[in-house]
Image (cartoon, rainbow, N blue to C red; front, side):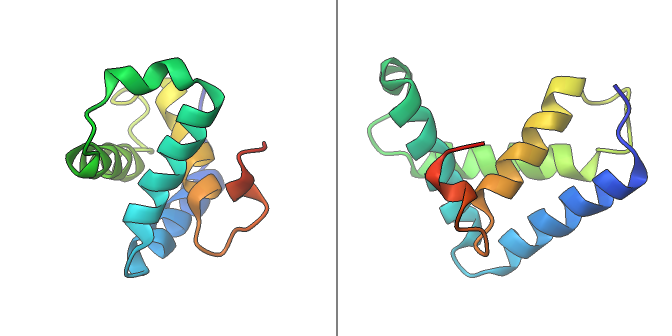
Length: 102
């Protein structure tokens, strides 16, 4: 699966918008894990009780993928689509996507 330059630009600008907000990265991670645990409560046991470090790791992983979206051989195609979904879901300006619906 190839991602066109317009889609890459959209994902990067969305992520940059999230990162620019003071609590944007934390909100992105909190929203992601809230949706994950609501949809699949059995996954909660795989994570530590204190999620601060895990949230930082998630945001770091997303940033890594977003930076390399145009390197198609460096990132599996499932990661590229997941990054787009995750960034759009947790955007501070998005209210309809934060409910966890696609």
